Image (tube, rainbow, N blue to C red; front, side, top):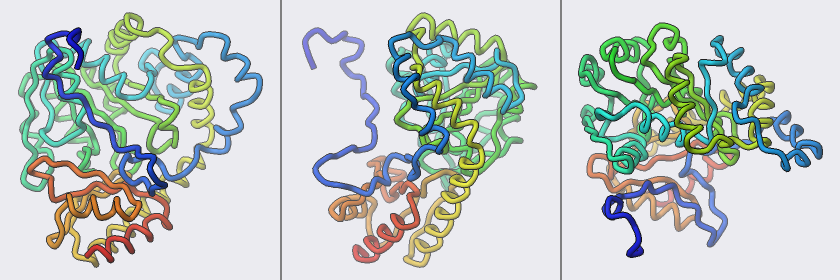
Length: 349
């Protein structure tokens, strides 16, 4: 680090993204991207006229896209805000609401503690149960702001709507943020509960099920007052945070609902088939409702499996945290990619 870095950031541990190596061509099963291209409507939406319009600033409110999202989820446009990926929405939420601290699981999305440290927010990490599930009783009535990924990452385990409602109802004076990056692959969204609970904030991304990770687009749905607060953060940081083309692509993706449903079902089917084949090889795994599998094997460590697969040109994700060091997280790819994965694992075993 340079001698100019602010002293308050010298001990900050930044988030570490999944590897993006370029030394060879890999099968990338480490960053939970979709194995499928964006929908046909998205591809055709990039036309010469839209490209020429890049000379103009984007609409800062993204109202055309927001209107489509409002219709899809049966909420008002004032209940929605769009952003440059869900990480930006998380940043806005941490800045806007968590002055008196926040709680989240000890094993979850790694950006939560990073944002807390970055913004000087006190936080507590609540241990998952032995089976890596969230114990909702740890969060009900604790009078704290709460952040939960649902399904959780990297476990893929989902909470039901009844559990989410109990947490929101049990902390009426604090924000309960539900990060639903993977909800389309299993489970039910808590968006419908935002009509009932004005402290509930739900975040969705286009990165996973909509095949638009590279476009950087997400949205939050909550009470009008919470969205207004997030807007204040946005307009104090970057008013034009979602580009023109990204807004166009986001709207086009919503028009191709049949493609979305088809590819989502395919990913779920490939996930379930791959889990079955891994069990036959002696693996155990969590009950994933996401587009990834969290698995371990008694005969090989997580680190050995990760490095062995990387040597064979397959990337998976591994963490050195003691509670999950035996596991690897495997993104669900195409059926062909998973065949290659299973063959490589069989050789390693």
